[in-house]
Length: 433
Image (cartoon, rainbow, N blue to C red):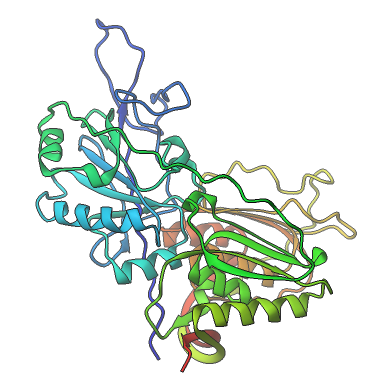
């Protein structure tokens, strides 16, 4: 059975010298994130400004898209912000791939940045690879810091870590990159902002089935599944994600037997009964008919991670934190974990799973729930084999691209992840016969 492909295109970079020094004061080389780094003032990125520190969930290197550490110090950068299924991004990628064959990574780092999750990005990269470096901006912090909500977007950075030019990657030329490498002042044409159509009159129907291609920007991505109100809705949702929502599947447990179109969709599914089962059936039927696909759950062998309790682990203590504030202090910098038993009758809620930060903070959650959160963060099926029952308060902070960091954080919790093969249930998606 073909396995679903997964890859990303996002990229990292940031380096800079401190700002605000006098002309007589010697320039000190600093790196974003260091204690000497001085973040630029203002809310909008401008030419000449020191780039903000860049923190990504994961950085990957083509052609294999394996996790790797990106070193940017002293190198010019071309930061390209894109999104799977975005027409402008597709054209820009073709241009940047051509430029990547001319310039080596020792001359300039071409970096693609995306907010979409790794599963969606890898599906997109299987259809259209992105050269050089890729980085995941899952929490959108870098995208916002670089004013890159309107994609595709390009920011050129010189060797000193200063913004050299801002514009549309489709306007980038070989000559512009050569000047950037040589330290010559560069520029890009002003970016054209498309007109936004006025909003349509909103209605509140009792019964509704709408699935349509979305022309909204990728930053508009959102969805809400509210069975209590009998309404499921979404905007700028990538096709694989919409299928996952309709069939209550996890992206890490889906197999596509056909070419996957990365278009984004908006949907609105409404049923007067406000019955979750009827809503889900209606959603599945609408997705199947609109996309011309059929979906079926099957058993398949796959790479899995088995979550187990360490043999030497001691019984977790009861959380003695102040009621209402159990384990919410997020001071861990990576590779740290805490596991405590939840108090009886503890008020639940306050969970935090922060994409791109490697942070999982859960209150009153079972080990099965923790395994699901790990799976969503790591993008690999996680099977709970801890045999631990009851509810727990837990916090894990780790570098998800670093196995040692993840292992250390879990070890603090008396847990471990073991790589293995396993037979699991996957959602197989194929074209209708």
